[in-house]
Image: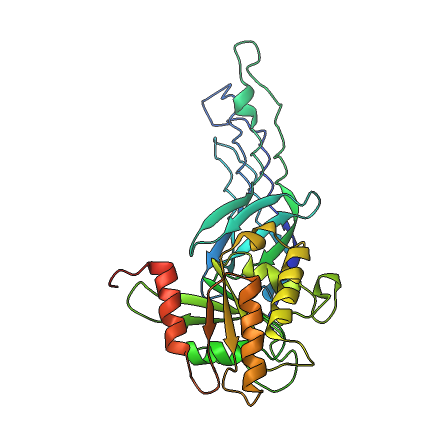
Length: 339
């Protein structure tokens, strides 16, 4: 299924059923009086978060959702049937915005979390409601009220503990394949990863770490170069940013220059100010490459001079240093206690 992380839809809650005008007419009961019943309320519209969904692609096929209307009342004080509610499943991590005002309506971050989005219309009242001592045969009723109509924008922001940030071909996909059961596509060309990928690093029951592989950034991504920064919103919910740097000089870009470029793109990105407040670590990948050892050491020493962030070393391709990486992540999230 194609990965879709944004969608615009229209919700229409059900309208309330009208009240009815009716009078009791039975043999031997003269002046039976008004007995028109109320209509039924319109159906509500809910969103429910489901953890077995991972895309908003279904909303490309259907963009208008409508709950059923309440039924009209009838005689003998019979109330009309209430309209059925409409419950729409969405992936966990879906953020709901009002399309016209850009107001955040809700943020569905827990499995099976259910939120009322559009309220159904109130029912109309039958003529029995208007009987008084001076008006014993009212013919007045009220119609049902319309339900809420909303134009919404849905954004899917994946939930992960660790967000991998790096240039194309830094080895992020190979890394996530190495430390988890995820199997993203791996190839030797830029922008192999076109959609966010999630992997779960297992340690013990209740102590798993979710890692998100985000498509690579390039210089000028905040202005739309490459894949742009459209996918940066997927790391806005993470708890740790892991900068994956390529130990090889790709097109003359050293580890220090890679880190500076990535930091600048994050800072200039308008996706979320929260991104720039997240804790960070640096991972230098492809450490066993054929790149000149002396130049590699010089790059790493230069990087250490400009940042005090923890620096880890791996070769995802040959599974070197990945155990140390996992231990460091567990220590960050769960502490040094015996898990």
